[in-house]
Length: 436
Ligand code: 5AD
Ligand code: SF4
Image (cartoon, rainbow, N blue to C red; front, side, top):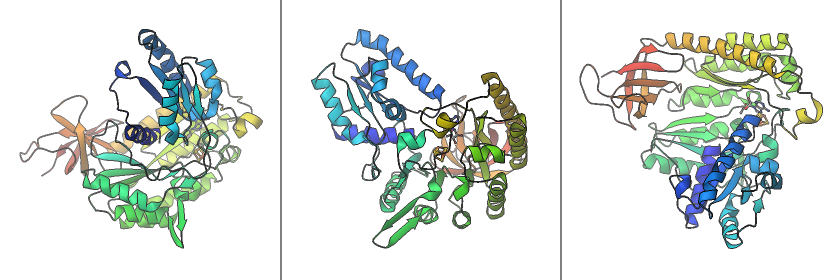
């Protein structure tokens, strides 16, 4: 989401006449787009701001600004604490950036802040500049904000109320990308399943939006993130089943395998509900991969709760998981009402157990792939060797393979689809060979 936001900022600023610099050394203004979801994300930003101070000592006219959720969360406090900052700008105020930057440059020394949240801003009319793009895959933001108020989560406070973007602008953006040679778009929102648009009797929900984007061209792959389990509907699964170019991968953050924890987290579903949704995915889309997010050591989590999470992981057998230690965030429900009472070493132990189990499951899942063939969208050179390429299958698994087929035939090219047979694997990657 931040990546997509940076592309909107890039567009606003290039339209205002600014250009992109390749390095901070070449820049007159450094803008850091930030995440506030866990404390370690914020500490990395603080570190970066302090590193840039050294550069500022050499380049007296270099200015630094903080964008995004950390700007929204801390506002003026951030500029008091980091006095080398010239501006803070929250996620709904990016249209004001040209004006703020001009102010900073006019009145050197004066710090600028814009942190008002909006109930309507979706940047729908802004065509993002594609930053560091491979020309093949792109993100499209379809909604902003979140009002689910999970007890641990700062997002509803930093990104404001949920609002959906005009579907026509989304379809147009996807079509333009396809016409420019892009072959995959990922539709982004905090909870895409509650996407909803109504205008003069014309309504569009998320399954309908997916069908419209998938209908642009069968050669355009469509992905989406993130789904809240409480809202994952059979209707969406039916639309996915009807469109082979909607990728067979669903990110379904579970957060915990314990009903007591889920209730305390205000997730609004039970383990039983979640497993029913997993069954529905497997029924409609037998070859679909499922990935998740999980938090270890939330308030009052017992060993029994933790074991329930491990059990859930053994049952679902995720293809990938983002695994986190609970981080207390100021302003959240948990900050106001629930103790952060699991010692850090205990959180770490639980997290490490989840990571170890998931590593084993991912490796076992990947071993089942040996000998299977997939259509892969070729994305670029493998990091290790120029002779090898990488791409992803519909399930979002990375495959690495030789550019030239062993049995002869044309070399694979970036931005095209090729058939690849899996010959070997690690827990993270499938290795394969091109099939004629
Ligand atoms: N502590 C740890 N993890 C968190 N997440 C959100 N808030 C917190 C927090 N306070 C995780 C959730 C979410 C993902 C994006 O980040 O798992 O799905
Ligand atoms: Fe945070 Fe919950 Fe909203 Fe996700 S659904 S952004 S975890 S409040």
